[in-house]
Structure formats: structure tokens, C-alpha cells
Length: 245
Image (cartoon, rainbow, N blue to C red; front, side):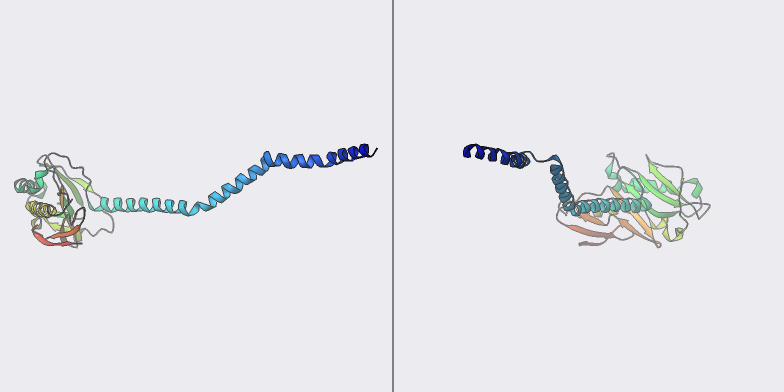
């Protein structure tokens, strides 16, 4: 009877405790899906909290680059002409005869007969034989027109947009002060100095910038693989200064 009583006690204990044991075993080898989900969410939250610094830095970097790109484009578009030089004849920049011919043709335009010609803001000389500039309107001094020299001829004028607060007079220089032939001198001097600097490129564009009734020839820097130089020219295109930055 004692043996039978012991067996009954064991069976009763199993009925109340074995389920708990089995549950513990199942949770160990087959975790509850809700618990797993909670763990995954916790891990995801931990991962996301670890990422904001890098993400913010990348976002800020992108915004800064976009801002610089926009500012550069805006500044360039208001001070220079858009032009894509071809490979036709890069010798134009150093061809004094052709440059003089272009200036003579400009002076011969009928709308400027007997009138002084004033260049506004800048004049660009390109190695492919093109020239781009803006001139004060021959009849209305408040207006400015775009002109392009291509294939040995000057284009008809097209209106240039002037803003309300633009001081047109301060950005004008008489053509008598800007000899086109001086562009060839600038190009020769620049290319000569560039040839002395490792990795520096020859000029494909030469231009004059005008402000406060003053003028300056560009390019103003020579960039090499190891060094960078500042270069400045006199009004006649001769070398004014050349120094390493």
C-alpha cells in the first residue's frame, strides 16, 4: 500500500508541476513571438539611437555642398559669361593679329559710329576664337547689351538685364583702355609662368573684370600639383606680380 500511495503522490505532483516545467522548457527553446518582437524593437531602437550623429553629419555635409554649389553658380552667373570652348584653335589667345581684327570690327559697328564704346563688367577671350562682352547701349546709357564675336563676326546686340540697384557707371571702362591685343600678352605671360609650375595647365580663357572704374586681367592664379601661385597683370597685359601662396 505504501508503494501504491507513493505512486499516487508522484502522479499528483506531476499534474500540477510538470506543466510549469514543460512551459519553461518551451520558452527556452521556442521563445514567445511577442517577446521576440519586443526584443527586436528594443534592438532597433538602440540601433537608431546610435545613428543620429552620423546621419546628421552626412545630411549637414550634403546641405553645405549644395549651398556652396548654389552660391558659386549664382556668383559666376552674374559676373561671367557661359561658354563651352571647343578644340578648334587655341592659338587665338596669343594671336595678336586676329585679336586686333576683332577689336577693329567692334569699333566699326554702325550703331557706334562717332561714339565712344564702353565695356560693362567684363570681356572674355576664348581659345576657340570667340569673344563675349557687354557694351553700354549707344543711345540709352541706362541700358546694356550682350555681344558675341564668332567666326570672325560680331553678333547683333541682345538686351542684358540690369537690376534696380546696379551701379552701371562704376562698372564701365572705355574700350580705349582695353586693347584686345593685350589679351595675347596676358596669355603668353600666364602660359610662360604656368610652364614653370609642375602640373599647371595652360590658359584657355583670358578675361578682364571691371569694378569701380578699375580693371583687372584674369586668370589670377596658377595651380600646380604641389604649389599655387598668385599672378597679376598691369592694364597693358604685362606682368605686375607673381608670388607663391
